[in-house]
Image 1 (cartoon, one colour):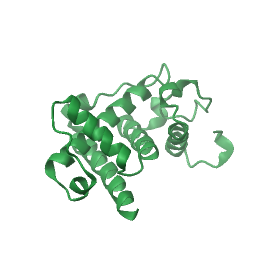
Image 2 (cartoon, rainbow, N blue to C red):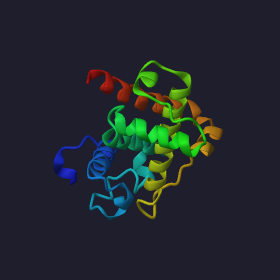
Image 3 (cartoon, rainbow, N blue to C red):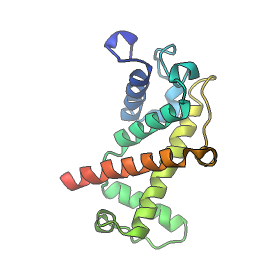
Image 4 (cartoon, rainbow, N blue to C red):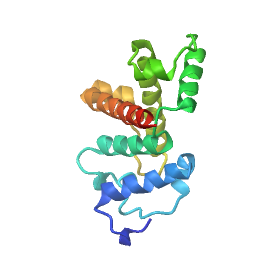
Length: 165
């Protein structure tokens, strides 16, 4: 993506760039994909503005929604696989999730949190100037409400898409 493509600034450029990386399923190799490093808010913390964590988090949220836009059978299988690894019953279903079952929702929220943490980790290796953010550390620094709002946003978007099917 080039600066001349009509972007509205660094945040728009960065989100669009990383959404395209997600579409191509190349997040693990994101540092190798050509882009405008001067405009990239992940390459340049000063371009990210006064709250780089919020920018990084928004980039990851958008990537997750590209890769997993809705609650579907594949996501439910991942939730159950995670539960099995944790020694829990593999009993999450679409109806339990869409019905708001507390136990099932905790699994969904945990999956989203893990996806956010993974995404932040992948952004940290994007360039030598990329920042490294840890969700637990950010919660301790008072960012818990922002993190929880992003988790709930992803869940609501995925739920709404599933309900439209």
